[in-house]
Image (tube, rainbow, N blue to C red):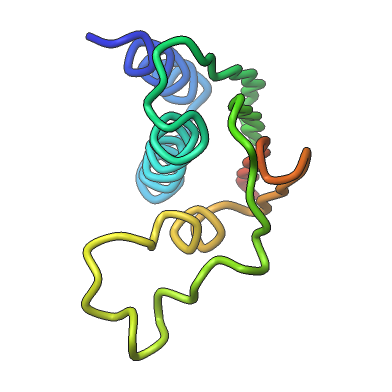
Length: 122
């Protein structure tokens, strides 16, 4: 198991211990997978010498995960809309949309190198 997969599993185990289940658990799992994949693949460009920093806080009602890569960053406003007709049949490009759809809030900062995912259960 890769180091990224191990950290992801530790966070998901904590999420389960804190009572997230069903739709809430699915949303967290999906967003976490997308954010980590984006940091490794797009941010760090699969460079094994670059690191991804992950910080997670989990409680019974809230998950907050911050993921930061060492890449050059990106401008969220210039990411193509995956729901636009010209992008519908593309095999990639939906990760950000999924994160922003399933999380309570997603914040991009440090020039797009850091994402904070927040999921709150009412």
